[in-house]
Length: 287
Length: 273
Image 1 (cartoon, rainbow over the protein chains, first blue to last red):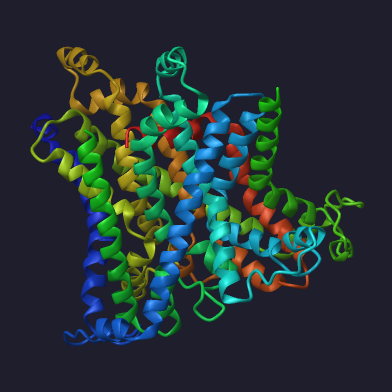
Image 2: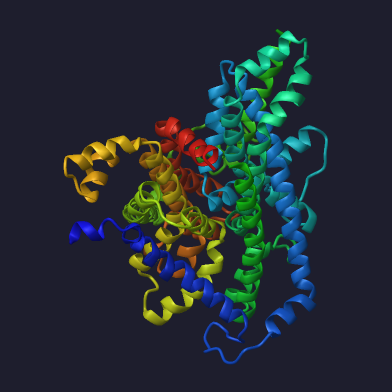
């Protein structure tokens, strides 16, 4: 009897179903329901309303947040991919010292987001310990208010995120480079292809699947990032570095508006859903 | 030759980009209060001191924060593995309808930001009296880690030939014995990868403990350092730097000791996609 029941596939999945159901799926459904209510953090919600969504979509705050999110995600992903690719190609040269590059990338990657924010806020300081301003001064530039004007602040939170995220992208691409069969290059060399031609006609096409997966994964991770921004600027000055996730947080825990914050969260959910479908489709094509 | 030299220069530049923020923080942490105000700044402190570390250890709750983080990591690793291993076994060894669809559904939870579930969980934990409760918090950590851990471990199980199972089955082993005696012993590398991944992620968690805990003595290091930043800002960057380095140390030690495993964990997740 005992053995029989263990022959059913679903028995083994019960713990997973319970934990995900209670701590993930149920809250998820709840947040959707809350987004259609006028609940605050302390009151019990009542009725069904679209007012949160109408408020969000017709206000200017939300579109500002969307704009910041888009710039932050797009710039982060672009630089994580390109710097990741360059470092992957460099590591693949396998000279003495390539393991230092690997080690330094992984080190940056394991730094928790909050500590990333703290460390970079020291780097960006305009006091004597703000080493970036010191470098700028040596090079003959003026001081830069890294965290104090809207556009510099957005630049600064993006740079800190690129610093932390590039290790992941670089290591994945390095693994993909390692997987390209050596014979392809040997054959091309016999045919007289230059290094540059080999790069465009072998390396890039062979890397393409990994680049696609990587792009989608980093997009999702970046989209969900808030801790390094939280430690650097708290979303400010003004709303200039408030990405969607911080926007949701502020609505709920600063303005105590549970309904609106939930609506932000649902919008995030829809967007990550779209990325996920993209990912699943892509994986499906690949198999 | 020129090519080699330029590659070395690029190696140095790239390593500097990734290491400079950490090295600079270490440098500040080793300086005296007066030296951090010196301009131009010194890279190697004139007067190396460990007083900042002692001050932070004696005057902040950093040790408690570290211990709390460590506890949460252990809970999360154990809990996640307990749930993910049987699920991974099922996905690897049973054949059933819509298996890959189900796996994708589970994996898609991975894409959801913790803030989304953090909002309602905060609400019903405060109703249930589960705020400031490690069990409640760890359960959410575990839920977040399960999807990817299941996926990673399933990949590891798939690589073990089914013939091994068949042989043991003929000998009359039950499914549980199979998993315990045949599969788990050979699946140590993927289990190690999963453990590293879970640990790194659990160590970094910030928003959930920030929302679900409100007693200082319970904060993990990520929340603790933010409080420390608030207390120290502007007047004592050398203390903040020392606190950051203390908070980072476990992760950095792990990188140095387990570099090979971390590389494998990263690439295993990626390549099998």
